[in-house]
Image (cartoon, rainbow, N blue to C red; front, side, top):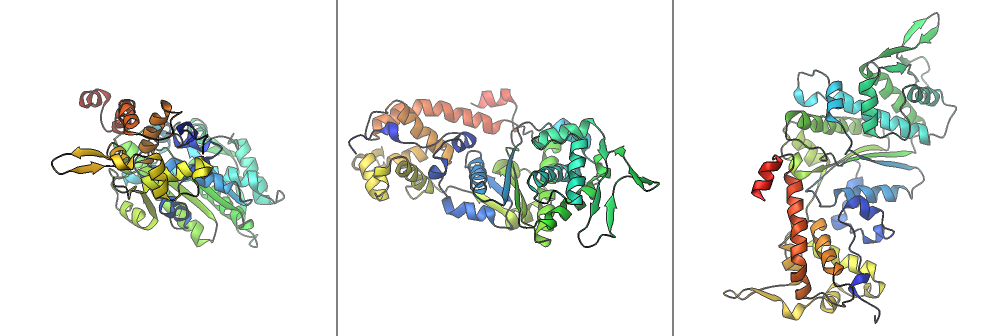
Length: 413
């Protein structure tokens, strides 16, 4: 290990999307509390956690794993471009405000699923396949468009074409949109509301035709344009409700399809609807990284990243690794009266929100100016604290955005 220095350690990136681009992403991923398997459980679709706790990282990891399975089609939709004004134009005048956006979200999800089916379906001769493919093309729902573009197109134009679903083995039963004149289905233009029932029917029929194909659609970064108002909250509640309803339909039909929602815990906590607690308890996973002691899984995560980034450390126990890299015998005295001492890990964790993002950033700040050193010392920790504090202040500002106006945030910080 004569060639070792701190510059060889890789703790990952602050942003989950950027970390997923690293060649060693899967090695650095720490599967805390078996969360990957929990997320794939057929009943779980809601992933809740504080900003920076690893929701996007988990979503990216799921996407990476799906690419290794030939019949598993998985997409991760970035919602930063969602325009709430386009959604408002399409909401229904439901007597229950928290269900105003349910139909448009159902449409968005079905269109996204339709695109995946058309792109990955094997039997190109299927009547249902040809019908759905033609429908998407006629309405400019390109296979590569994001959900935000689907919303924009739906809000700006009428839906055209016809959907005639042919149910396998039950050819006499048909569902269609259009007017029959002299035996022909004439194309009509109308609201997406007129098509949604037939779209759902044809999508489910195609899924049944090739049931071995697995589809997973993940929605992340729903907080990117967060506003603490009723429209935004009703929008998110509607998405949660329709995701639950569709996932239950998929289960009832024994289809390997799941809609997954990744949502900030502080945003979920301000939503209010009679169904939400049931959804959280039955179908949700909360990401919680414990306390600020050395028993914290964040310590295990950090040591795992060190071992994965420098192979000579891979055979060391955690205790051996800590003794090799960290100043154990000189733990800092933080309270003379009670003779309370604190290790490097405990000190760093007390300066975080107990999130992977904070811990990774702190260690990256240390490495930035100490790449040639072979140990992490107290001097390095203290000298990096100012730069880390600047980052941490920015994180607080970002988390308060949407709850408070910018002037109030500036005054408080």
